[in-house]
Image 1 (cartoon, rainbow, N blue to C red):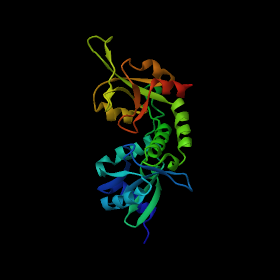
Image 2: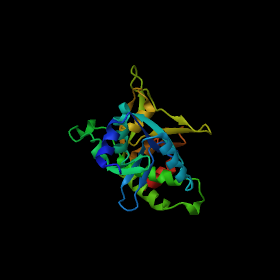
Image 3: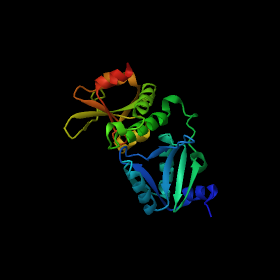
Image 4: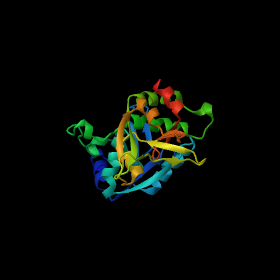
Length: 254
């Protein structure tokens, strides 16, 4: 007997453990756009074997996945992540059965409208989603001509980048507030990259509880905030990890 939506919702809310498909290219949940409904789907499995089988099927298209295990106590964080990256449905796969469920039927999104805008946590689900789709395709290890609608995905990402705000982190010396240090990363060539974040969830992955001062800025402010030693910005270094030089950034801004 086919699994009902009601039973699937209960499983996704109460099961002790689930396995979520993550993209190796973005370090974020794998998202697929349904060709008929255009729903942006995340994929959750009842067993580790199920997610491995799913991953094997996508290998032919050079889509590289990994399974992330979530326990019941972590479900609020998981569904919060889905909202933050713009997912609107979940595909629940239990053995041979699979059913699509609207995300709000599983977990409600926090209403941020009552929080004053200056205190409201920054979320950029449309930007995150377009970044995920672009990076999932761009990093697929195939010949150039085998990439699908890469140009369209890039254009959509650029449109969303231009109209979004970003978070820049700073370490301020409490004894001398004029002393400000900008955190940075180094790539494998030892070049300095300055991190910038599309939302609070990506920021928290980087800060890991460190107290930093945060500035919320539009895209056109980023070139002037880049530290002199930086080779480039890296957008969401713990996520889709998009590297942009100052020249590329200025070209996007136009």
